[in-house]
Length: 362
Image 1: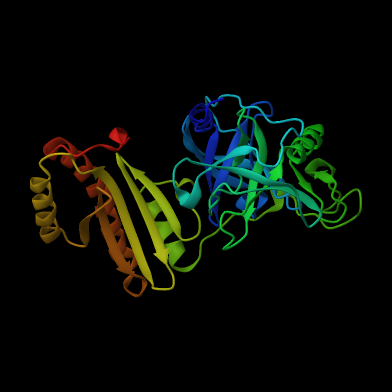
Image 2 (image 1 turned 120 degrees about the horizontal axis):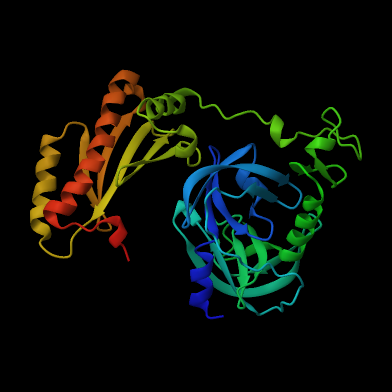
């Protein structure tokens, strides 16, 4: 297959994952009707927010966790139209072969990087990994490693810090075996850290592994996440303004809200005490930019608590509050104004000044 054909196909099956603790990548396998990712991406969670090109952002359940192999399986999203991709069944790779790593690094949308396999037998904690030089970054974890035939040959799992593109992927043969073992059961499961057997929740005996007697924490017994401190106050405000907080969480101290046509990111920087709300609006037009700049500067003078800026041609409407001044009642008014103004200005700038809508991005 041509590289562009592979990239276009995997754009449709590679999904973005988010929990209150982490963000990462997963990919859909139609043969099992599940999403595959890394265990460390979904750790401590019984549900995960998924977002993809062919379905609406939604919450899915964690079905299986495997700390030993760093694998996790999630239920498929509802009303999706994701196509089928092939999972390599036999090892047919050679060192020096070309590969592609796909994912959502740093919370960005789909990214694909190419590289070369350099080692098919890297051993770490008695588990074999493929070593390659395709660029992997935070957020790539759980994404597929694909060969030049468009087949998934591994799961991107970890990098070596400051290793200059030293990436490691769990081989597809390990994933294949785990999928086959999990398919035998008829419930959620977890791999026992002691005996390495997969333990299904309907077989757990009073919280203990039926094979070796080790203590087992099953997925269903995990506690629901509950925010504390400033994070809790922020979440209460988001709920009060009519948004589903479970869908809004995007990693630690980070939330994403869609308000009309505007995409709003809220972040809390604990070290500095700064709470930032950034509404990402339309892009600058190609022509007659000066009247738009003049209008934005005028609005910066007129608006209270909100500020316009431009970054990489993207128009941003921002709200900044320090946590020491973060009074719930006052902050609610500011957030409400940000949400309302974001959608209003996004439409106005497009209609009145010819700004480019997000759908016009190339």
